[in-house]
Amino acid sequence: DAGAFRALGPQAEMPDGVEGAEGWEVRERASALFRRYAERGAPEPISRAEIEALGAKAVLVDVRTAPERAVSVIPGAVSRDDFETRGGAARAGAEDLVVVPYCTIGKRSGAYAKALARRHGPGLRVRNGQGIVVWAAEGGALVTPEDRAPTKRMHVFGPAWAVAHPDIHMVSFAMFGMVGLFWMLWESARRLCACCRPRAAKGAPSCAA
Image 1 (cartoon, rainbow, N blue to C red):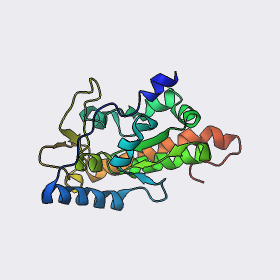
Image 2: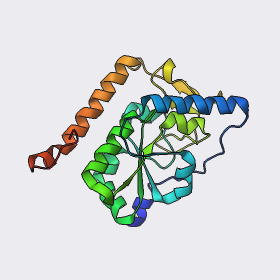
Image 3: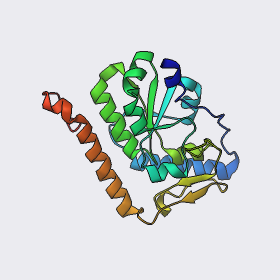
């Protein structure tokens, strides 16, 4: 029901960003990563402050893989699979909610945000999340996906993405790094094209159009 769907939005109080010169430097480095790696042509990015202001009007969609999400997620986020299984886009459009996909630093989420915008048009409000790295750099809370308990752990691909405040424990997996990143980008592109095949079969433009 509509009430249950609104519960997918942010559920935990978000702390203020870390202050001081060190905090400022971390935020600047994280923002630079987003500017470098974010998907070109994606819907307008959205900041943590804007998400906080939207409250339950924001629907956070974590498009990362299950192993990444197992480390930590942004409070209130749902997986892409859950979002799609529950008809999230249709409900968001009907209730004038803002869908905010996010990943590590805005690349995969930007591709998904573009696909959503193409499929649903102006009836769906979509903004590209700046990623969990920027979120944490701005002082946003992290939680475990199972019990939503606060955590200081965050997944990153490798040293190039290892930007965080000193109290954040950054986790990377052996399969990740540049090889893992390219594989995951390829997998995201494959899934995006697959999701548009039914439309293409009916003569509608595909995601790649």
